[in-house]
Image 1 (tube, helix red, strand yellow):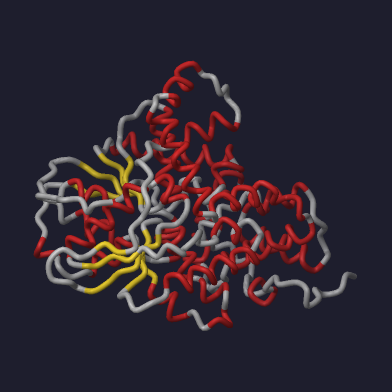
Image 2 (cartoon, rainbow, N blue to C red; image 1 turned 135 degrees about the vertical axis):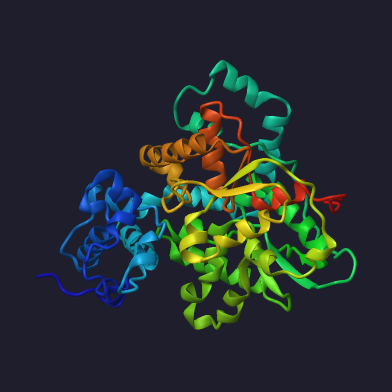
Length: 422
């Protein structure tokens, strides 16, 4: 019989042992719902991870498929009677796979190397913006020059991009100040959802909040943490804590995946005393729903329907999915309704829609059906990856429903809106 793990293992076996394999999570797991395979269920994956770290199961392609196939949506956590911290377990299980097979993260190291370097990220942003602005993307798509491989998929996922610009360190409040807020811009959000960040600044400033955008901030670390590289994630977390911590009222983010990661820095770095930092972190919609200064603003009526997509990280980790509805209901005549199936993941899940394409597409197809049934004029999501995934599947079938962040729809309807100079 193999010995129990040595001190070199960081897998939290005690947390895994809290799972009594009751199965209450099964109806809530998107991958188990599709495959009906216990290896694709939360309790099945926990059993596999327990076997891996105790030596009863060796690393294999089949085991990796089961663990990599997890979306880490954490819907299971919301219904678990034993409060099993599944998110922590799947991250640790993948880290153990990397420890035993380091070559499995070559792509993540390359991608992370680009996204965590501001200069490289800015250069990539300009290249992608020019690619669209000069019409090259349209030409390539029209002529089908990329074929049907991975490059074609990446191109299909690319949303319309805003022109890259450098962030100012400070955006002053308009009128009497309500205080200062720190904005986390992230890496993928800065590339693919810059308009949402600009709109967040506009709305905060109009409400009377000064917005700080610290230049030293970096990627939240989710890319590395969820792909088995916790050491790199901890390094990025330490940099962000140093860059973002201060005397502001809150640290806000427009992408729930990043914001959830920031909120859990106290678990990633438990000995650093960063709990006060984590408590400052809020999703932008949650902060705005509680903000002061709304009496200053007026919104143009919009007699249309908006469907609200609720990202898994917003529902299951941040517990803030109600805030977007509250904000959107401030727009007169707007019909606000939740997208059917909000309890199930859309398939984006970080890099999942790049690596586990078949499952991601099956989950996205469910969202497409929900949008077609609802027939909204607008679709909003509070997570950049989800917005990319939803936008791509709608474009694929030629469905002209704009996908944007809730704050962007608010700013679009803001009466006498004056965008802050970016």
